[in-house]
Image 1 (cartoon, rainbow, N blue to C red):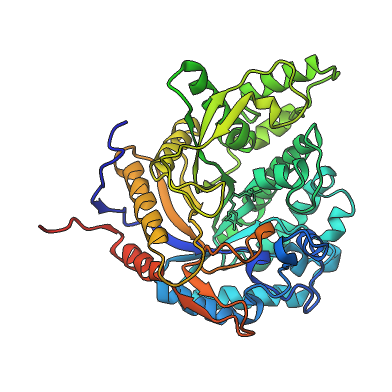
Image 2 (cartoon, rainbow, N blue to C red; image 1 turned 90 degrees about the vertical axis):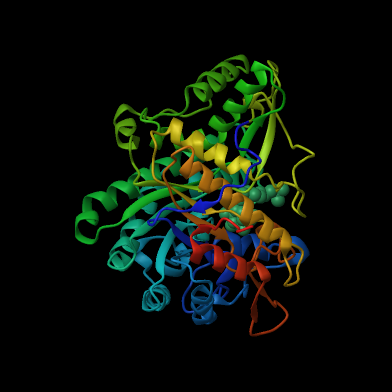
Amino acid sequence: PEDRDEFYYGYFPHYFIWGVATAAYQVEGAWNEDGKGPSIWDTFAHTNRIAHNETGDVACDSYHLFQRDVEMLQELGVDFYRFSIAWSRVLPDGTIGSVNQAGIAYYNRLIDALLAKNITPMVTLYHWDLPQALQDRGGWKNDEIVDLFGEYARLVFEQFGDRVKTWITFNEAYVISWLGYGVGAFAPGISEPVDGVYRVAHNIIRSHVKAYHIFKDNFKNKYGGNVGITLDIEWKEPLTDSLKDAIAAERAIQFKLGWFGNAIFSGSGDYPQVMKEFIAEKSQRQGFATSRLPEFTDSEKEQNKGAYDFIGINHYTSNLIGNKPNPDSVPNYQEDQDIDIKSDPCWGVTAQDWLKVNPWGIRYILRWVKEHYNNPIIFITESGRSTEGGLDDPERIYYYKYYINEVLKAIKLDHVRVHGYTAWSLMDNLEWTTGYDAKFGLYSVDFNSSSRTRVPRASAAFFRNLTIENGFEEPED
Ligand code: GBH
């Protein structure tokens, strides 16, 4: 459709901010230093669940090299740095009975170093590294996690709220639930796709809402600041122009983004209607006494509604979605959706099977969020692609140029309230189960050198120019 293939020359609004992101387990290293407790990713790595038996034991060694990271952020000229706090570094056993001052001191050093260079910290509370001690008590499946997360959040707000003004409770609630507890491909490696996965998601939503209200009631007046959640979502394009595929594509977005987003952002305080209907109907056919999708109480729904100051969207890629009716499906979150997921051979390929390059998808998903969630303030909290190495990375430059141009179209043509864009990632890092092969960095990292030398790629200079220009200048001819 309209304007898809035309490049849009122009500038981002003056309030638009640019940043880059990392996550604690992917960059920090120092996995057991200065009192840090083990997390589920330490356990996962140490039981050889990562390619080539890699681990995050050292990773980019940012625990020791954060000054260099701050220097790179300065070189890039970014406005903000999105990083995450390792829960088990500040609370080794996950509970506030176990505060580790050395862990708090590390984040104070990082935050102060950023502020000294005028770089705003954007802090994620949970980027997948649950304290192992809490996993031993059931992790996100145990309802007690909601209060424990609330206490952790309160501590973090108390300690850093005077200097940190943008908070993200969770990174990619879908990945935590489905990959961690549905298929078990990610830590903690549990496979309960029938109903455990829905309980986990339920507790993540409740935990986010709890932390949001703790901040609002106790810290917002004192410190100022905003709290959001980051959800990951592809653009889901219908496989054909049939009405059934269009409905299936919408359903796919609701089952992934809406699973978490609907309760918080839609105004209903509840799961998407289509999820409630599909899962209830399938559960009944499958002989369950009640739906496998948990229910919120009325008072929970009230708390869920509007529990955000902004929404964070991680967007990398698009899918094609076809309708796949299956009345006899087995009980399983994926099967509950009656969809087929494919990708368009026209889209650019990367070394990651899941990551195809389709720039206009980001504009379409932004417009979807605007329309379904009452025009919220949106930050793109991650976006990017990998390359296979080397400093010359035209593919990454292409990705940023065209994806960011589509973000500009979303703002200028569709009037979506996007307030910032975050490149994933500042530097190469531990790409979860695939180890160190996939290079997502604007900076390359030499994982063979003990000093983990960081060198800018061509895309770093490109990103710097783009963010300093704050848009795309029309070429003179
Ligand atoms: C983001 O997830 C993460 O937030 C970030 O930590 C990560 O480094 C970045 O992406 C790049 O991958 O290996 O086939 O099981 C994006 C969503 C979910 C996409 C997990 C890859 C694994 C596919 N990701 N998925 S597979």
